[in-house]
Length: 264
Image (cartoon, rainbow, N blue to C red):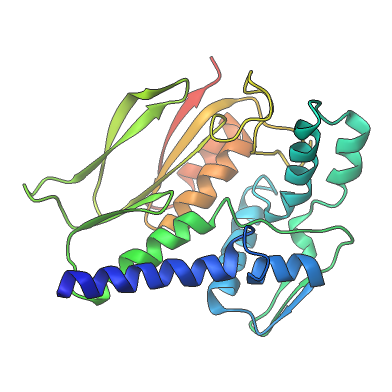
């Protein structure tokens, strides 16, 4: 009975986050924000996530940017026609990408730039892991591993050992490069293989906001951090920032570790 109540609470949290942050729901808060340019009385989760996003954007010199959604739309529409967008199209759309155009207050969120649109796909899954863990803990669960697209943990396994997760080989989905042990930390991976627009992995779903193109330093970036929110945002930020700046981001974040797989 305790487990059933805890799991119900966990799924209720996921449903709330979907209703707030999913681009696949036309009535979600993020969809309404993109449509109307303004969202009054936003859910506190929306405010929390966007404020964290802005903090990571500032720390990464804009490598992490929730306003890359217009680039996603451009590439997805182009891929559907069998072609990639040209430089002029990329430059035109990139002018709408700027995290500073998102104005966040407790009672209102506003998109200031013309053509600005937000995606929370680089941060919401990690936040969902945090909220699920909190719901489980609030209902008496002391040991758990959750996977909401990113992974979070409470306590230990049955045998008393730390929870262990594998980092997959970006080019072989059935192979692991290494295992990492988690002790009340979360892990998130950003990879060039998750959604591809071209089979050579050159064009994929992660974008450098400064160029409008997919970064070419990494095959994947895995980050361990104290919260799923932080791990998720950092994995995307590091992927976009590149190796040198990415290492600095990890080293400047208390409790964070990174594992990078380079293109070579």
